[in-house]
Length: 267
Image (cartoon, rainbow, N blue to C red; front, side, top):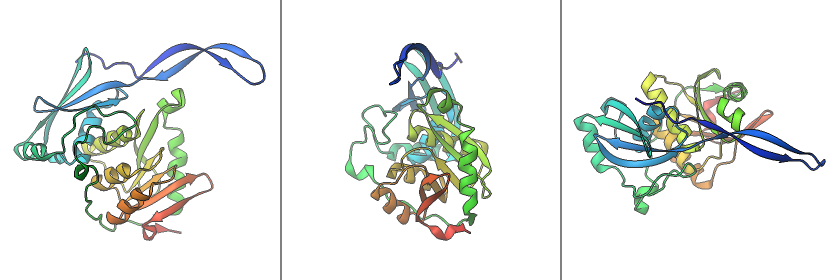
């Protein structure tokens, strides 16, 4: 396989400050590229994403779109083409049946959008199954995980233009971190990485706002606790209640706000 496109590019710019300075600088910019997802050689969707961890992205997308389960994915092949990157997922017979029932998309998925190209309203907001009770976490574990995540965002620190999603154990120890210019992509990458590595942990962290698609992805992946640094939407709150997901938001160094599922948190 040819090397993936670069994740960043360095470009010249001029930095102006109110104090009167005007300085020539170079700035690393996060890049994004079309990532085409195919199933058994047939195109299904194109996502605009950071061109790294594309296998994780494709597997996570497959799981959160409810196209197939992890054990229905037989192989993942990546090919760099002139237009971008193609990831072809080979499915078992059961997976091919699920792909035939998957919601259709008619346009590329932008890095800022989780539902680009979905054709029908009924396919946009889908019912969620309730999560099991899961473990109780000490409140301090949430702060510990976010504090550790700050030092694990290499792309974000370099470019100030990337979101991160992370998975942590009940004591706040980080297990996996993935980054992308798109918050939905970062979470799909995390979910795909966890599935491929067989990692299970209860706490999912996202460094973005918490719209309902983020709740849906976390619930479908089986993460009982989702913590975000920004506020949720009202629909995200309703979907968290529907799926019995603990939704934490507005996470800061001095605390956080619990919107649903507070019974999973211990003093």
